Structures are given as structure tokens and as C-alpha cells.
Image (cartoon, rainbow, N blue to C red; front, side, top):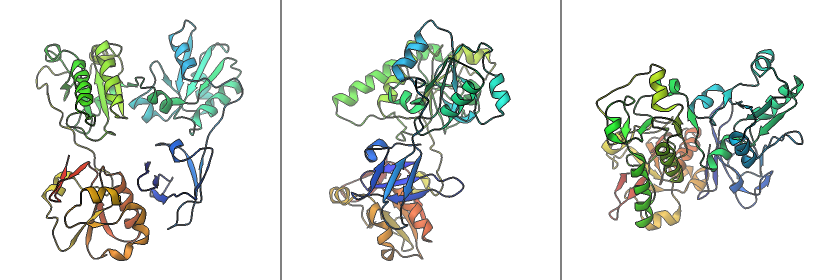
Length: 402
């Protein structure tokens, strides 16, 4: 799920149980990976460890394809822009496909009924088929290739790099209009990249007007002022953002996508078929209430405290502990007044420093390490929540949410 290199800690999603937090150190060995730098969100891994101690080994599970089947991103782009007819298939579960897929992809899940899977493919067994999924540690591309070859298809390719590789190249993903229509709420950021004069005549409900030129101007400003790039009103780089223009291939929406992904936002998609396709689907359109400022509401993760509640909380209460899990270096630069400081990597060995009768709110610079600390403390029986926000510590020790 998450990796903290500052704390040498990794949070792992485990099937049918709560996520697990595991430390690693210089003695941890890696298999199928040169080190922690080769791991990323949603990778499939196998960890050997004793609870309370750093992992002895972390193995990255990598799925291969038969010889001559795998293609890289350059070959993929060559096919998508070439003259040969092809069928591109996203083999991930339907939810991730709808939220953002490679342009022109259809959806087929290889673990559906086998006959139904084969029946959905073209009749011509020599037709070019390209399958992809969630990357090298995702098994679905290989399973789809096996099914197609077993059914007699002779021109089968697999783009094993998949969505993670496509995202790293900052190439656009398409979000399904009906999927977007069910998410017109403050938990999703909908941005109209057209000229605001045009947007005002008709736009998606809840959309914010932000033309492509604004994105480019912001990039120039971040560089000029040597500032961290941030979408105004959205510090959460995992926020779901949907961009649109008249068409999904319009220059303005592609420019906005390029800039926003270069700022580090990882869940950005372009509305498939654009505003024109949206209208053709008969989906709701507004011609007033066009916003010019984003009002994003991060969906609370399990165990998180709402920033509004945190801001209204008396942090000096006797029955409350503010637990600062940042590194020693971060705390030396800016100490939170009244907080107990225990670096994330030392939490398991420092439980006796905490009063189990008190409520604990864990904080860090961005919320990632605080969430991991909550997992550890919750498992040890503490009453704990965490602040899942970017914070700033002032010279007087006061804490503010960015």
C-alpha cells in the first residue's frame, strides 16, 4: 500500500484481513528486486518476518509471459498509432477499468466464464490481440494470454508493464462517463479545461473551470519560486481527478493531464469521449453554478480523523496524546508543542511510553507514516486515530493542516 523510506517501513494489504505494517533494515534481503526502490504501490510481494522485528526477506512476485509475447511501451505505442487492426483488452477487474484505462481498450476479466471470455474476442484467430493489466506483479495478462492461445489465437501480445508503466510515461487514461456520472461529489475533482466562457454555457455538474493555460502558468510559477507543485485546494496527491474538454483528444485536456501528472498526482484520468460524448450519453449537464475554486473533500480512510474535527480539538487535553511519528531530523527542525515524539520505526519497541487509557492521534508530515503507526498501535490495543493530511509546524510549535 505505502512505503516510508524515512522510517524504513512498509504497509501491506493482505487478503481477508487488516493491513500489516512491517519494518525493513540493512539486513533485509530482496528477491526479484534490487531493493526497496524497485517496489511501488499495488506491487504483489511476499514478506518473511517475525512480528515486532524487521523483515528478513521481501520478494517481489513477478509474472512472466511466454517467449515472443511481451511488448514494451514503445512497441505498444507503435501498435496503437499504426495501421494494423488490433483489439486491446484491459484484463483487470471492472472497477479499475472504468476509473481509468488505456485509450481504445475494452474490458475482459480472465477469471470470468472461459467460454464467455473467448466469445467476446474477434472471430479471426489471426487478429492482433494485446492484453494488459496492473503491471509486472499482476497475473491477469498472463492468464488472458493463456486463454487466447488455448483457443487458437495466433497473434497474441502482452503488455506486462501495464497501467503502472503507462502512468510512469505520463500517458493519458480514459475514465468511463457513466462511472464519472456516479461520482459527481466533493470526493472527486472534476475539472473543465476549456475556455471558461465556453464552459459556462454547459458543463458537468460540480465542475471547476481551470483552462490548460492555468496549469502551464502554475508549473512556471512552481519552478520560478522553487515551490512544491500542488493543485490549488488539493494537497492529497491520491485524490481522484477527472479532466475533460470537448473531446478526449483535445489539446487543452492533454496539456492539463501532462502538467498535473508531472506534479505527482497519481489518480488522474481524462473523460472518455469528452463533453460531447457526455451529452450524447444523455448524462446531466448544467449551464450555471460553474465553480472557479476546487472544494475537495478527502474521503476519510479507516481510522482517520477529519481535518475539521482535528482543527477544533483541544490538543492540550489531559486525556489526549498527540503522537509525532516523524523522523528525529524533522522534529529537530520543527517540534510540535506538547506532542510525544516516537519515530515510526521505533513504535513497536516503545509502547510502554504511551498511556493506553488515553486517546492517541498520530501525525506526520503527510499522513502516510501516521496511518502506519495507527495500524501498529491499534493492533496493540490502543485507542488511536491518525491525521491523514499534509501539515506544517510553525516556529512556536503550533501545527496547521495545509
